[in-house]
Amino acid sequence: MKVEPGTVVVYTDVVCGWSTVALYRFYREREKAGLTETLRVDHRLFSLEDVNRFSIPKRYLDAEIPVLGRCEPDFGWKPWQTDSSTWPGTSMPANEAVHAAKHQSSEAAEELDMAIRKAFFRDSRPIHLHHELVAIAADCPHVDAEALGEMLDAGTAREEMIRDYRAHVDQVQGSPHFFLADGSDVHNPGITLHWVGEPGAGFPIVDADDTGPIAELVRRAAEG
Image (cartoon, rainbow, N blue to C red; front, side):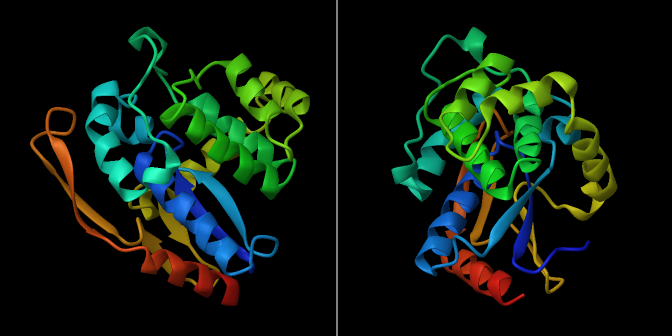
């Protein structure tokens, strides 16, 4: 997989809490290192609903939120606050919106990706709806929301997003998986976990949580 210098490629799904933790930490470490303007994230799709053959159930996130909150409490995680009927039945439109924003700039894609994650995990917004995604984009300074809406209507980014996903899905261990320009890669850096009971019926336990590997990833990505 070719990764441009000054870039880190990351395969994620916007409804994945673990990738949200990883990206939240990545941006924080990047800022601490003074690399916000020079080290960019290239967002790629790892579709959980395609791999699992079902959309992410609300009960999965109900079990994960308290654990995710302990990892990064300042993110503002909340259990779903609105009627369960508004729970997104698919994350594909939201992921497509991020890839559409990439056509504007990498800054736009980074900004919209994190805004969608906050809208989902913190604000309980129905991120599967077109008008909701455009409204989220309108609050992102680097995103042209009107142009984004037109791209979603036209499906401009969808084919490219899916083609890349199909081409690399066997190389990706899960969400998140980072790939660097030096040829190295790492899945869910700093966190190891396991489930007690069946996913959705049991609960996750974090066996190790270390922010050091994210800081090291930022350093190596910058050098690469």
